[in-house]
Image 1: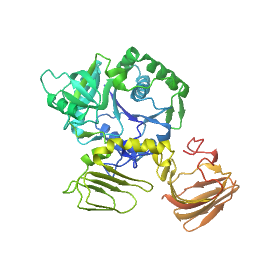
Image 2: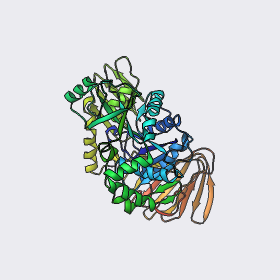
Image 3: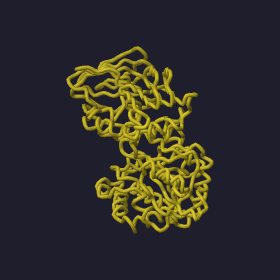
Image 4: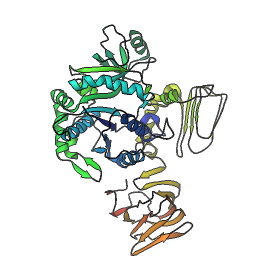
Amino acid sequence: MNIIPVILSGGSGTRLWPLSRNSYPKQFLSLVSRDESLFQSTVQRVRGISDQSPIVVCNEQHRFLVAEQLRLVDVPGASIVLEPMGKNTAPAAALAALLALEAGNGESPVLLVLPSDHLIQSPEAFSQAINTGMGKAADGDIVTFGIVPQHPETGYGYIKADTQSAGLQPNMALPIEKFVEKPDRETAEAYLETQQYLWNSGIFLFRADRFLEELKRHQSAILDACKASMEGRTRDLDFIRPDKTAFSECPSDSIDYAVMERTTRATVVPMDAGWSDVGSWSSLWEVKSKDDRGNVAEGDTVIEDSEDCMVYADHRLVATLGLKDTIIVETADAVLVADKSRVQDIKKVVESLSGTRRYETDSHRKIYRPWGCFDSIDAGDRFQVKRITVNPGAKLSLQKHFHRAEHWIVVTGTAKITRNDEEFILTENQSTYIPLGAIHRLSNPGAIPLEIIEIQSGSYLGEDDIVRLSDEYGRSSDN
């Protein structure tokens, strides 16, 4: 029986602010490996289990990030489903199950549903656990994977397994007695002593038809809305767009609440695979290499007389002296300094910033687009300076502005310029001027990235001052 990986990529990673932000959340960051993001590591991990192309469920804002990161690890043929809005994991899994069942030609595939932003340090142990759960899933059980706890953790939900006095041995398929919410410290210590409780990983294995049957039995409104949404879906480039109106009627619920806590066919497989949800700076500190005083240092750092700290320097030198159990994260536009024991509360900082509409909760200074990226390196009353990078073969939309003019200076590469009825080439150290209201486009016809400095001047310099006349990526606004 085929396994189709389903990768849920809708999270925002609030507790890893200021590195993780709404427009570029933690799953797309290279937090653990310099070579791969968490999303790419997830994709690579399931290659050892299935040769089927994955289904990725993500939101509109991240669609080009997903497509580009899949391209970089050479994963063709993935189905990218764009949730019209976030409705938690049960509707996301239902959209994927409906799509997989429709393509199954009368057979129901087994779906391996997993978050895009988790770390698995032992792919071999992960594969063994999936193999253990496969028989149960093929027979119709809804299988989840519980992490054998290493310490009393208050940041995770727990699963109580019916161990029948066998203990929590990896790669056993056990009935589930109950799910419990995140405990306090004393309760977590008691759970650890019983050897019956597992951390809830949020990873599932089930036949597509069986999941939909259980959803119909226990949360039919979710299934009805997802069916209507998929029946009205459209295609946009390589993306599948469920109908927004139908999906807006869907209740928001997790797989745990909608199905796992209600079904009589729930099974858990204990797994000891070096798992972490990398959900906070302290959990990232736990899995990173440390010096002899327990410090994790990334970037340009000097650490003196400090211990058990994490120091992340992205744009400048960061030095510490006499610190203990401290998290310091420096980015181009924000710095976080926090006691390691308080990192679960970083979301309060983000909520405070959101309440005052600070852009730092949503995006970095460097903004990624399907054609490349731009970095806003300086700004004033009536001017803004950007460093723009255009990927080989890519082009920006054909557009105009009502409130600003632009000067372009080529730093490296070759630029093809469209300006009203003109079309011409610029190379290194050459420049041009785009008057206010001129119809224009910037393209990279070369084989290396094009880098330009753009100087904007005018009465209003916001990203919404773009009238897009033609676009390679189907965008109607600048995103």
